Image 1 (cartoon, rainbow, N blue to C red):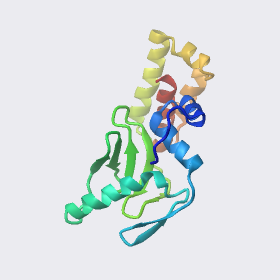
Image 2: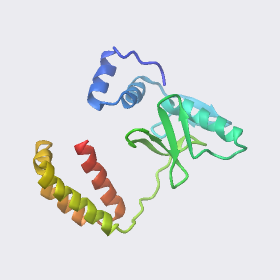
Image 3: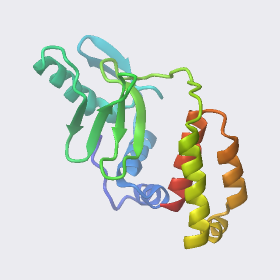
Image 4: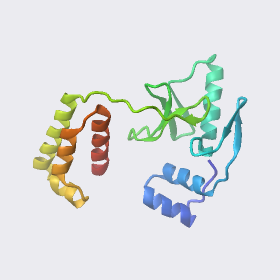
Length: 185
């Protein structure tokens, strides 16, 4: 990533809109960068929507760690003080905020620098998790006036509950849960 002047009006606007300095810096770099072709250990990686120039240092660190571990990729690694990559269950890497657990970039093959589009899985819904989530929403209505909070944010609590009840896959349920908790945090 290039250094960004925090007083740059365009950067300030992005920071205000996104609320996260890392995301604002990535977006700012995306807006102000040019397309490049970057070699990574004899693999030419073109800076397209799949590979972002902003993660070049991360790719280099990954390659260094693999070489220093005799070809074994790390389960997690850090670049600088604030960029943490974690290998997911598919063997790809996610850029994760260590404090919140939010995933900024998902499913990167760090050996090639390419973000993988994996076929959508259709895992059956964990009915216990569904019931627990609905129970927590209903308790939130009673204890914290969650219905009012969601209404202020522009959401109908009955629709939220209905969507949770009608989720067809675990992936859909997880997405609904993430959206709900993102609204509230």
